[in-house]
Length: 470
Image (tube, rainbow, N blue to C red; front, side):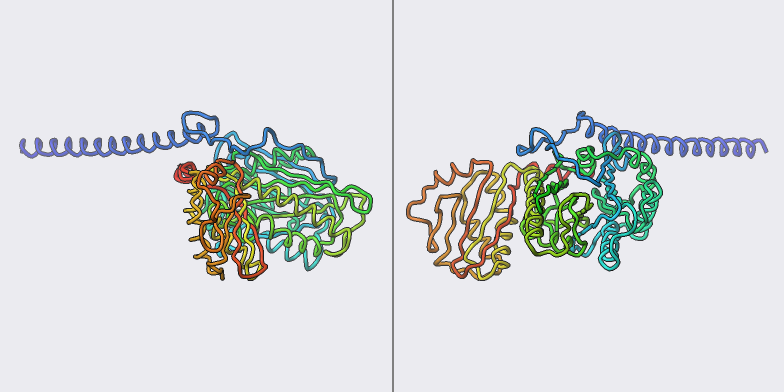
């Protein structure tokens, strides 16, 4: 009997010890998890405040300051820190457009388009069928999260954000345009964005465009802005734009994100056509790394507040003047994106002539601009023109080997299918030390021409993208 009691006590004590051990193990696991979370939060804070984690180096092409952009009648801007991904940085912006504004939109052709892109495509198509919605319109953009590949939750997040924006500003739901940029595949913290709407609406001001440009940055090292003023019918028309983009840039439409606002009065159909036409030599003519984003969006809004004559057709004297200025703003923004390419130290124009068609020329130019071997040679300042020959050959377009010529700037490197008689390697090497370069190739088979702007591929690009979610 005494042995039974002793045995029960021993077993109870052993069970208690096992229970305590299990609790201790759970506490240890929780302590470890807490430590990892604290470390992650600390790393995020350091990234934002320039702490121990390496801060992104400013692009060598970064301007000394954000450009002084003129205000646009009928447009106001704001931005807040909503904590979408990191604390203490601007990450949601709003553009308010006056009633009657026309909005054109062009978007990525990716098969995995984000929920905000699908929302905007529907808004654009509806506006082209029925005309602009009544009342003011707003554009709301967040950085830090792309809301892409997030299923029904992504669609619901879009509806919540749009409803919150409409309520805060008085805009109709059909007049709310959305865009998101950042990490793909993570649910958007919609409540944080929605909670920021009142502050966004209250902070709207014509001069806050720089804040808006900063709020849409991800791996960008500087905010991007451009402007043109053009006279139409004797009256000044202002066009301003902001954009973001640094990596995942090989648009099949536009860029990562771009927003252009003008006080011109333009018919919605005409604005859509002019916006689409301006893409070919701007956002569709750049590449950083050959990857097309799920979120590419360009919106162009015309408030109609200028005293200039209304543009009802995409052709005509007034339309041509406006279209040229619009294309200049879009090309300026596109070039800034390449100059801020992740880790870039070179800005490169690739020009192809003598192709069978303009389409063939652009395809060959893109093959050269996207070639990792060409881009790494540029980074190493190596005039390795053989890599350009290889890129031309793989492009899948007709080229006459025995008529092919290559130039670095004004330096004739190859001619009639071989190295040019007067070419000196030291001349090519000296040219490659420049920050801005031009590579010209003539295929010798036709009159088609095309051009692409690109940058080099450096070790820093690998570091940025290896640590992107860290």
